[in-house]
Length: 435
Image 1 (tube, rainbow, N blue to C red):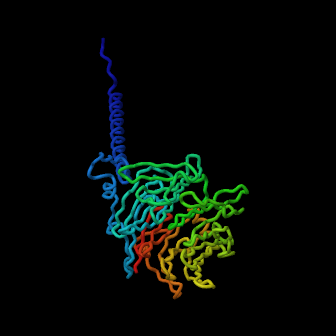
Image 2 (cartoon, helix red, strand yellow):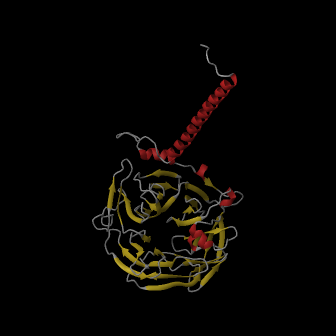
């Protein structure tokens, strides 16, 4: 029998196909390796996939986190070129952040903050730019967080059903030793206590579901929150941190308000701002009595100074933004186009405020679109002195090719540092203010 042989052209074609297949597999293998390496790099930066130390190890996870997360002012700070300003800007965390607060300790001041994706609590040290992760209790999808002066916190998240959950939490080492810590037996809903050694433990309780907005008195930890009422509007509830003195002090058919709390416990209620629509702000005392604060201002935003009668308020209509200050009985027009949401008052008795001011043209319906996150501008930082009627630009990020849209700014008690979130990507920044 004659041996069967494929024609030479067919053999060449088969060989070519085999070579192409092998080449494709090899290319896919190296592609996957490169992607895996990139993912591992990101995971290590987030402390994922890092082997946990054994118990009794002289170097625990907290120390390892400090080594990983410590950032130098030389690599993550920016100073404006060609100016005399000595202000310094520091990017604390490039990951989305839910909220932050300055915390005074026995030795120094720290900035606590919570990452949105995982709910981890971090501590940043502005004076030397050190950052350390304090917890590893996973609480995902956190979209809002506030801190009290002692390091306890309120955070709001979305559960799998799309409901808003509100959690009152504290680190085990930061809970007060007497009266007023998170007390699961006296608060209203489900409690949790998670030990996550060698990190700090998180203890706390969940409040009512679908709280629309909540305000925290940072010193006393008193709470005021708004929740849907039976009439289709909202009810305003005041309570202490440990669940006592809970009472309904406010009801409204208007369903959207922004609350804040003054140092004396007075609640400030602002109708949620809308561009070109008359806005109203009121004070609400502990007896539930409303008093008008600012009335009938288009696109109203307000920033009261919590320790004095000083008030900043903004107006928005079309492509126009206005800023006004009240230091006595009559408002002063401030020659800066911004909203009060981008401002902070300097602590103490001065009449000084710092505001982030857009440095470009204001687009139509800026306020509405900005709250939706569909438009962003680049801000400069300005100093406003109502006592002298002067304004001064103190920092321009564009000098370092940065574009920052300031959101939720806050200042430390010394008046040296302003922390804020960049609305474009929810990253966390700190501006050191030149004194």
